[in-house]
Image (cartoon, rainbow, N blue to C red; front, side, top):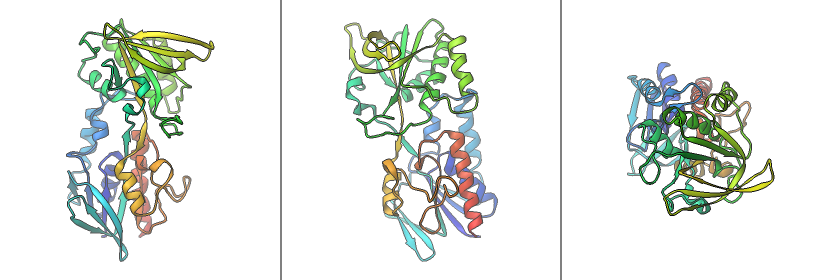
Length: 335
């Protein structure tokens, strides 16, 4: 049976590896981090059913326990090129690996909120990212910059997405429902806290997402404000003052909050940008480009090179898992 190199051990890469290994392929998985599933492991619970992220990580890691799979952690692939009918990939230490097929599953990186200076991230202690809020929720340590329980928390959608200033015109797909989920989780831990979500428009695109949004309002009293926050600044008592516009009312407003949570979007990872350029499959915004988004979404115009997961565009976990399985099936059909 032929060999496959899979670059990236996120949900897409792991699902592709497990599917191929069950069919007898020899699979090598390369992950630049010390362990797989980094972008899930730092979460608390997952939408829409509040499944434990730790449980999902454990179940997915078990899929790698196959004699046909060799795992290479702490191995960053920095170059790749065709060699004969197969591929040669090279890691950051100069080691080379050869295989008949390659699957790029290099995923995404969270938007760096420092780039939105007007929002005060890294300047005011009360401004945090959605990833930092996940950790607060996970360890039941939701506190303001003074280490006290907050009385008010404001979420801001579309930080680094749908934003001409940051250069990302696309929607990151999961931020809206993540804010809804986090607001519910916060209200469960701190029932008396006020929770506000500022949004351009809410995109509840998945099954049960609209229900979750309704539940957040009806059962937990989460308040939604259609508007954008233009500026955040610190106050003498360690809080954050925000300036915004309520676009439904057409009125400017000011509000102070203990925590301002920036819902950061997805960008192409450095690995995705580097390898897409190396093998000539660069797409929009640094993501990898497939042959066709409808009937060839895991295929590339390079022979025996396949792509899956969030290296193509922002995806949810279940989308990435299904996409990894699709890439594996595409390889089988290529035989």
